Length: 153
Image (cartoon, rainbow, N blue to C red; front, side):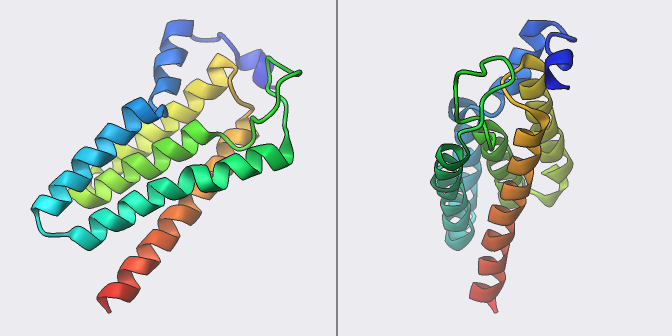
């Protein structure tokens, strides 16, 4: 299925969309939101957001090695499941939204969806890779949120 979707949109567009999940794009967004939270005296929230982002590679990399899933366009290459770019986008953008304003949550959802869609349309990931990362992102954000409630209660 994923192979049929590749290049159904201009390659430059799918490349741009998938780049939203790069650390060089998503991490500065989260860092700026963390700086804002620190400025507002919300050290604990900033710390939890940073720890949530640090959890992404700690969970994604071992899963990629364990599953050794081949890519849609490179069946000889391994390590496509789950999508690190999707997990990075989700944790960074939702984390930034929670730190700056809850009204930005829909923007975070759109950026995450665009990232995952771009990865599939560009042929970098199977749809299941992206879906698994969304569940992983929900898990990371959920644990981070639970830690916030426990520490403030």
